Length: 319
Image (cartoon, rainbow, N blue to C red):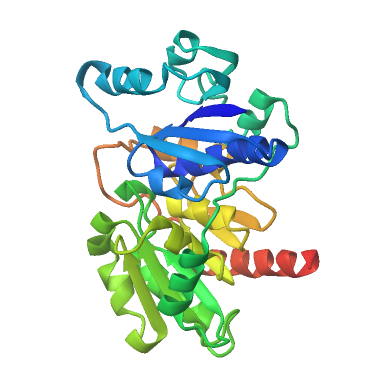
């Protein structure tokens, strides 16, 4: 069986889409998978079982990326074509079954929408597969030696979604203090290459002997292997937050000008906490996408600590 899986350019959306991929990979053990996605998201698919190839689709003028994709796959008969970008390409390729996502349903979470699309409810949980070399590299980087691991995602792709650095620094101190939730835990600070500048003051607030810093200098599957070792992830609404949730570790997402109902971390060990102001109140108050100013000031540190405490308590009950 051959599957053509067309998914997002964005990392977060691509991670959520692995719920669909997981269903087909686990249902059809002999499946051969071709994945088309943006270059940023491509590395998370490198260990997918049954993978034949990944086709990166950097955006080109006049839709040239779609033409390039069509030329590279039109010579294959596809048993299933899944297009989560709502293009017309699925209807122009030779195949038996076509599943196309046409628009977003803001009344439900994206993972639930994807589950309905393929007729599987409750939906499969997102999953990112890793390789032995990714696990070995994670062990080499972290050197935990029995210590707990707190992972912090202090950045995001837009300034409005970023909790202030001073708040992250204060939360790290409270979480790792001798009477905190993760006493003397090692801290992994992680983000994309362009985000390190935003995170510098948070990084500097953690003793260098108690921290590991990864901002674009490791493969995404190595980062995923690190996330799988986390005792707690705390971070802004971002692709990394979704990666942590897909790692099935306790994941707390911080929200303000985005909707957790649609994009909250999805899994059995996940929770979110948001600002005093709702999404609608933030946007009706004059927020705009062009500003890089944080819209997360209305999220107190103590609320985040309490949410983390509740999440870990819930996780302990699941054991």
